[in-house]
Image (cartoon, rainbow, N blue to C red; front, side):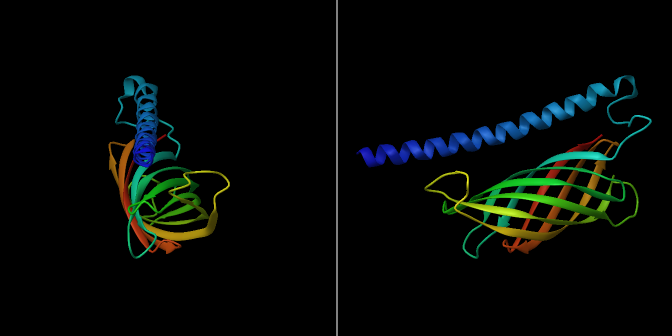
Length: 190
């Protein structure tokens, strides 16, 4: 009976931590969105200010194939700066579908826009590299991680702009140690 109670307790804690993580991503997105809305004042929230920088932030929902047996699902966050080429940081936490191994990715990103214009819309290639830290599900997330690998990959995506501030980006990716992946980002430009 105690074993069953402990198992139920652990599963409840995992689901609560996932809900807290997702709630945190949503709160950050809404705060950033509202800052953008109010910072533009009378100009309107879909029109850019006269001198707009090329800084952008976006949370994302992702799936990746780290093994042939199961997908990993999770959320990420990117922030970068640049016009024709963007450089920035990307982080993602992915939960294994079979509850065996979770992954924390921390990457530097370099994005090349194929249209040659400013960082506002159209197709792009994104190169990423950095550590991928693996956490066995039974042990939970504990630093230092049990093991990690250098992760590198390339993504292809398309930025769809709504007004001049908001955007969504569907993307696919491939690399190492993951086999393939994809997702959807939604963000804002400053």
